[in-house]
Image (tube, rainbow, N blue to C red; front, side, top):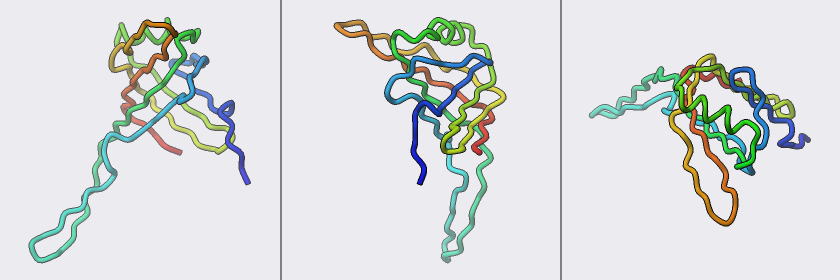
Length: 128
C-alpha cells in the first residue's frame, strides 16, 4: 500500500522551487485527446492520432507565497521557461522544456487574502 503525501510534490519553474501552495496545489491536463475515432457510413472505424503536445497546468498559490513576485514577473514578461513536477511518493513526473504563464491571475481583495491561480501553457509536456 502507498500513502500519498502532498509534501512529496516538488514543482520547479526556471529552476526555482515553488512553495506556499494552497489546498489544490497543481492541476495538469492535456489540451486534447490522444486519439480521435471516426465511424464511416458502413460502420468502419478509423482511429486518428492527435499529435498536439500542449497541456495546461494550473498552479494555486496562497496569497502569501514567497514566489508570487517571481510568478507575476514571469507573467508580465511572457518569458518561456522549463517546468517540472515530481511526485516522489507516487513516482510520477511531468516535465516540459518550454512553458509560459498565459496571463496574470485574478486578484480578489476582501476580508481574507485570496489564493492566486496561475495558468501555464506547457508546450511539450512529458508524462512519466
